[in-house]
Length: 199
Image (cartoon, rainbow, N blue to C red):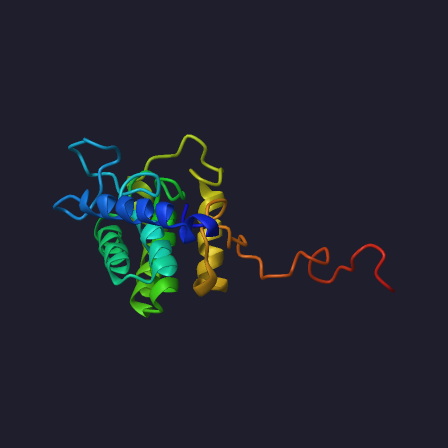
């Protein structure tokens, strides 16, 4: 709903969104993470699809829409949890891997401009490729896929290398460019002319 302009402006929907954001913020556990479902006692999952990493995006967006400092505080708390627990052993992918958690840190960098978050994302990139982490990690079910495997990892590394301040989680964040500079594909790619373009 935070992406829907009319809903943000409608007092009834705006009130519901703010209430929901506050309730979710209050659901945070003592260790700084969020449970994966309502009423769950365990809070050990720190994945894009469970817990603190997804909350980084939610609260960064809420801060950009409403400008309320408490939402940036929630985002910062979530990112701190990602930093503390986000080197995962489930592989390097986006959904429940180190690359997805690295993107959460890049989202904080983009939201705040604080280079600490960029340095932490770079640290995640170096750790996910380290022999001890690779050796201790499981092989994902779909090891070449975007969300579980190396394709998503490559997107993270490309974004980190080419334009970290514009990095965006592929197929989730509408700003995602998969590491390709803006406009590079509009004319068929580098060095190529569009059909019908003058010779």
